[in-house]
Length: 145
Image 1 (cartoon, rainbow, N blue to C red):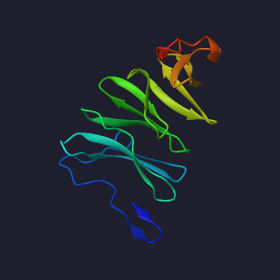
Image 2 (cartoon, one colour):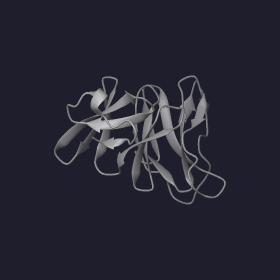
Image 3 (cartoon, helix red, strand yellow):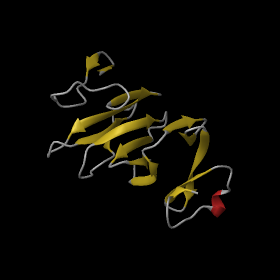
Image 4 (tube, rainbow, N blue to C red):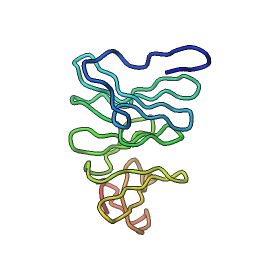
């Protein structure tokens, strides 16, 4: 990465070429990238516009990036599931089906021809709801409402 006149290496060398989207994304001054951990698994990291690095995953299997938001939040894949990271832990929001989107400060998920809003303000969990108030989301089990 090129930053303020110098080159910054974000990821270790690996045998396969990193893929745009899955292994790195840039948005709003933020960079999301994957890097190989101690046991050869890929972890998702972000670098803030100020240069602060944050590892979002520490799971037993390889993770990949789904979508980077312009505020540094990231959705990612691991083990057939989609997670949201706001920098302080992961919240499971769905299976790995479909595609997540960040628009106007809110998360959305498109599965087939259906577009869901991801409600993340319900206690510590997330609910994916098509036009259902957050108060009606299942607070004990994140997922599709």
